[in-house]
Length: 247
View 1 (cartoon, rainbow, N blue to C red):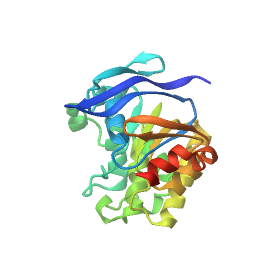
View 2 (spheres, rainbow, N blue to C red):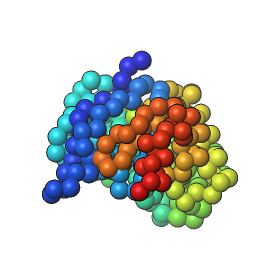
View 3 (cartoon, rainbow, N blue to C red):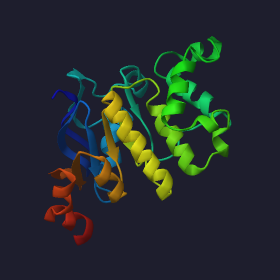
């Protein structure tokens, strides 16, 4: 199984504080990898170093064998790397469909082309496909700001998959979502993984969600990976229990 993402000895220090301390792992094609850990363990810092929001102090990141360390987020978008953030990135005054078209444009053009190009930038069919896939058809022309929080989360995730990305990193997709919408989100992610061999990494605090979604889980504590394995192994790992409960 080929590695889509390779992280080697990645480190990030802020002054004398080591937020990420020599982290190495791989994500294989078609895999759903979970990244968990207590608050302050370095999960978001690790994501941001991988995705160009932060420059790592040391180490290397590769996509399909190509070094991308310190590459700008906009350039990573065009390489087929998507992400969601803890805070929603939808545009509340735009419709569901317009949000999806705008997300797709981020992967294929400049700001100028977005301003002067076709209204749907040739992305109408892709937007319609995502709307149908994520069960948003009845909301197509609704402004995103009028949707429930759970519906906005679905839209946010759909936007990350608009361009058929090679890899998507999802930062707390379950945060604040009610159980009904959470079940729908989990099923949409499972289906896009099965149908398109979509590869993604999930940071999540909702343990039930991540354990039921991910095929392999990494546990981060104090900037280091302390455990790796299948969900059942992670549940019973004494180091993981100590990291969450012992401190």
